[in-house]
Amino acid sequence: MAVRKKIGSFTFVLHSHLPYVLSHGRWPHGTDWLNEATAETYIPLLNVIGRLVDEGISPKITLGITPVLTEQLKSPAFQEEFTAYLENKIAAARADSVEFKATREPVLLKVSKMWEEFYGGALDSFKNRYKRDIVKAFADLQRQGHIEIITCGATHGYFPLLSRDESIQAQVKQAVASYRRNYGRKPKGIWLPECAYRPGYKWSPPVPAPGLEPYERKGVEEFLSENGIRYFIVDSHMLEGGKPIGVYLDRYEALEKLWGQFEKGFTPRPLDPEKSPYDVYFIGAKPGKRPVAILTRDPKTGLQVWSGEHGYPGNEHYLDFHKKRFPGGLRYWSVTDIKADLAEKKNYRPEAAGKFIPEQAYHFKEMVKAALTEHLKNKKSPGILTAPYDAELFGHWWFEGPEWLYHVIRNFAEDGEVELTTGGEYVSSRKGGQLVALPEGSWGEGGFHYIWLNEWTAWTWKHIYEAETRMVSLAREFSGKGDENLNDILGQAARELMLLQSSDWQFLISTWSARDYAEMRFTEHFSTFNRLAEMAEKYGRGEKVAQGEWEFLGMTKERDDIFPDVEPGWWKGVEHKD
Image 1 (cartoon, rainbow, N blue to C red):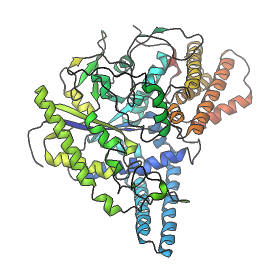
Image 2: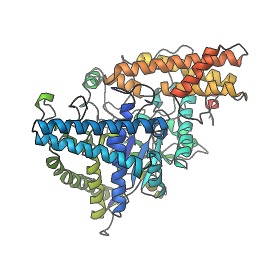
Image 3: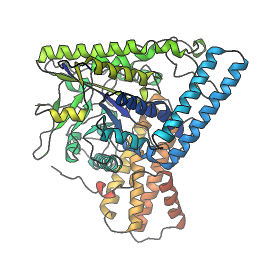
Image 4: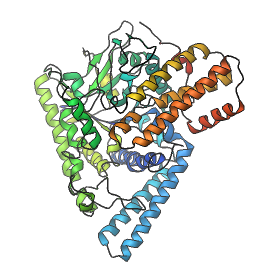
């Protein structure tokens, strides 16, 4: 590989997340979400990284894997489900091949053979290469120094809107505990759920919350610092102002309509020319607490990958995500035109799609180099370009995405002017940096909370606030009593609360992509939490608990079997209270 003077550094930050779906349905909503993402994103990503390593290239991807996703990938129940899922897909591809051969459709026959090879390869990788343990495979790559795994809120709770500091504390502490158990060390970085941040201030609940008065909140960065987390990622508008870049509007019609209700009242912050997304900044300067670094999403390269309309995934020759052939559910059509009706989609031709991947990968590499060169010229020092995306974009949404990733990273390695690094490596190499203050906000269109708090979701926050307050009361009255049965009840109540807090429910409601499922799941976890809370109160106060309640506890523990190290005492009070 060429050895040339470095103009800056680069890292992909890929955020992998799915809500807890095991034992909560299979199709169209439920475990098959996890099966699809594993087959189409997680295994292809592992294979791409392994391919690069075999070629002598360390890709230095910064990979976020949420605690709730980690727990599911480690579950024996998932391992059985996933194997059966792949076998069904292989059978579907073979059945399609028989039909296409009989009807003399050679183009479709070639794609059905592609699917048989794709799912057969995934099954072989899962069983033989990764020994049915996706988490260990990623952990091994981290241990070898090729990637860095960062964490997230335990169940992807939306931090700025949670009503209790104890809840944020528990989401972070559980994240660290789960990470240590599964990856063998403490995490250095975190992807804040929805990249949502809130500074410390006197906070008032945005929806009616009986008994919850305005109070002084800690900034999110304080919880990170207290738990040894060194950095997190923000959208560019959070650092330097300007208009946030939306990433979901062209995928969800409901979001576009929802944004129309908020757009008139939105005024972007003025741009601050002194701030650059290619520099590392620090936030939080409380006595005795280490400031936390921030890496900033690059706005120039973001849309090239995110946008189905303007970016690489919208290429007319690439595989269309939406149109599927039943009963097998396999895809046989190309994008054709992103505005075309499904009936107008043309047949997919893998060889035609493959021709554009190297070209687009080279274009992306040159965009990164141009941005870093301009930064070096203006700031007189090398910077880092951080490119964060949902991991599931690669392979699941954009079938050709993993191969594109391979070519981008290989291009950087061969070019030699940009250093591949991980977020943790880069932050650790910084000897100092400017302290900044961040506004409250998130990523996406508008840069605030409207996707998660709006007329369709306000009712969910009322229930979350009620449950949070009740959990704090339970922890203060009953945690730490040394009673195994009581700890069992409180522990499961804590799990149900964290599952209730998942930001996925509001997102799915707002996008209308799986609204009924999200509302059902939310209501189920709220009902389960309250039943367990009542059980804890009865048992903890010496009252008789019916046998049916103990059976309900056992059923719930089996169904929502995550976080064996949850600690109800996390809700007892806020540590390091100022």
